[in-house]
Image: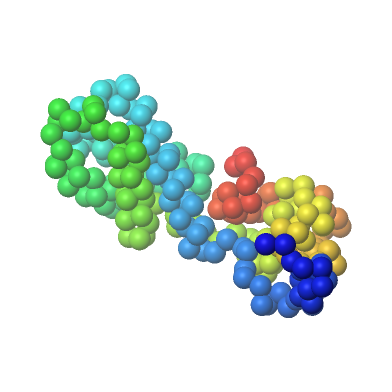
Length: 221
């Protein structure tokens, strides 16, 4: 609804209000959301490997537990390479197989070729969640060097700068002023011992965790 011209609402009249950043909802991806994104990526990798292995060996091969152990080992090897994290252990393979078996037992072998990809993806998402909660898999990462040196807000602003956003664009993304962005970047340069934006961006790319790359939309090297 259009606001009448005589409105006294300062926001509707385009008047900038003093804002305390502490009152704003944090736009930094939380640990919970970051873990959820990693689990979803792990599930997508499992689906990719599943499609490759069933194309090579046939869908009926999934009836064998040995096939599943090889499948989970292969998928976690790839997840560890892309996302970081642990290499597959016997405990991980056992746990993953325990999640899958009841779902497969409820299916007839003849039904397997007709199962939709979405069902397999949902199953792999369940595996990713369960094994992560048990302490296995690529969702358990070491903290990056950045987290020991910078605040969360500084890491967030640095990640935007590393993507090539200007101070003005970063300010609009975070609902803060440009001077606030400049202030945080100055602190970043000082803490990291770098001279400029380019060096700070390179430092971010060299030291950020895989989850921070995913959260910032940067390609995993």
